[in-house]
Image (tube, rainbow over all chains, first blue to last red; front, side):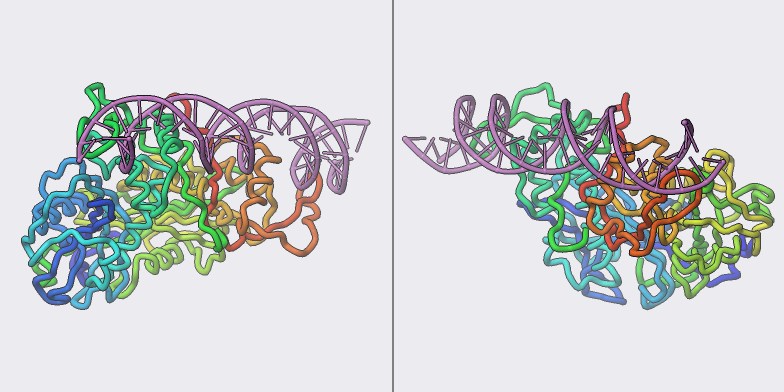
Length: 239
Length: 239
DNA sequence: ACAAAAGTGTTTTGACTACACCCATGT
DNA sequence: ACATGGGTGTAGTCAAAACACTTTTGT
């Protein structure tokens, strides 16, 4: 099978799709584009598009994000491969295999449509329904994955700007998980994990709202959390 | 980009590659095939091959496993998508995007070569080096993923036959992690996790070696472990 | 009798929970 | 003054680590 004429088979198209997540006003938002062409013209979809002959899926993902939404050279963009969707029939035109990514972004800039996308917009996660193709499923998988990875990795800092307060970091967990966390315990846990965050030598944040100014932290070199920061075990189902 | 002539671009080939892992004689083994054709003829590689026009990656993975190694209708085969490798140049002939899977198998049957594979063989993990293509990396990624998933999922039972003893289950952890676990604590932990294992009503296994006969258990309905069964945090590095 | 593997019990340690409390700032 | 968010202290609880011990088999 490996020694094989490159045109002997029906060609596959390979695409990337991106579930770009961010936090705005304390709610999880996802970046959607309005499709300008058939199929699904006028419907909302995840940004994405075809791989070019000389690029990897990761490269294509960054390029498509820039083309379709104007988010180029975004600092702090965390890209993570989710999985590949390959079921026949997931695109009505032809056989398309899509490598899906979850992307996390702090401080979301305003996107603008471009390329095939008539428009690009941050949408609250709960309102992102009835997307084109199988993008509802991809988005749900992305959210599950991100929620799970908060437990045992340092991924949460990818939602925060370069310098952040522990309150902001806690807000990431609370927003993504939809649960409240005890502040004293959270800060002890985070500070006790070597390499999770490290204090910024400069001064504390001054204003921004009421209350005592908070100390600023940067993301540390660690990537995994040992021991993990666990959500409350889900009640009522067999684990 | 989406409204697009299917022949406008250089076609991509899409393949699957499988890192099939099992335990034999207390050591982690991986299923390798000897390549019969160029490139890399005579070199060992992970089993895999091209997607057919009407099958998903999961379907193709099972088909290729049967074709190249004779492992068809294997009971208890656990297939799990790892990630997709898409770097240009990873196949010297043409552009190949490969969806990699990790597969776990209990009671490994003897494989036999077939299809493109001159031979198929179980190989100790440590000796599986210098594989064709980027299969060294895929194999390492599979091992990392499986090791990590033992911590917070019930995946370990996928290495065990339908009915197994807690000693065998503990051996899975010890072999994959390369650490010793305390038997009393391990059994308490497993039995305290609802749905991880459930006792088999029948009698205890009689012989098999010296020592007291062990009770038999089946895999339960649970898929995740809350709280997780943690490896000792790696010393000497910042988490 | 002894080795080997299964299974039970117990003490100690340490982490997480759930609070109460103080601090610094804006209005 | 007081509300708001940052930060510290502490007692109770519960799970896991460590290890001693009993049980049941094969040789």
